[in-house]
Length: 226
View 1 (cartoon, rainbow, N blue to C red):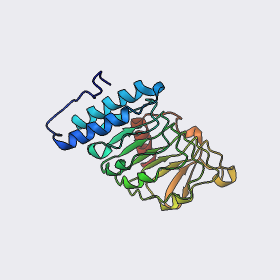
View 2: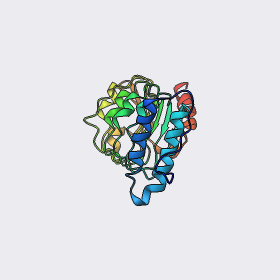
View 3: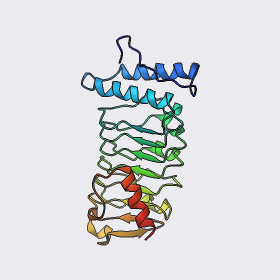
View 4: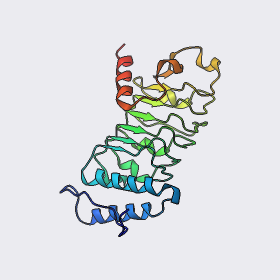
């Protein structure tokens, strides 16, 4: 944050007028609420959000910024195709994320989500949803509406059974539930098994525990073409 309390702008002709002021004001109010220990991370996140806005970026990486909340400005980032929020203290997402109609990859790895965020159902173009390493135990109230989803990563959570909603996912979707608390009887001692239309990855030995998005897409493409 600059000494004047405003966030430096990186402007282009793509965004002008009253919408700019609304974006800036919302972002400033959010950044000023940062906990003392997290001020640096929140300020850096504000700068990166500003850059994404005024340069119409399609990728935004806010990894490990000590974020416990997000500003409600994502409706003004319509060009985003990849959003990385991993390694933060998040347990919910702002409603404006529903307006990210072109988002393909959402990385929420190693946050504090107790459930799959319902708002992701609004992301109709989503292909990869990474929720590895959260606190998800119960998925009974989640009804997916993600027609383009190709990979759902739920490994290293607290699941005790295979999520019932998997039957609602398309045949192109691979769901990773390895390294949870699911009894072997549920997994039928399989590495990859079919469950309705989707496929379930059951063994942690067949995918790296920490893999970047490009490797994940390459890995997924390889297995789909086998």
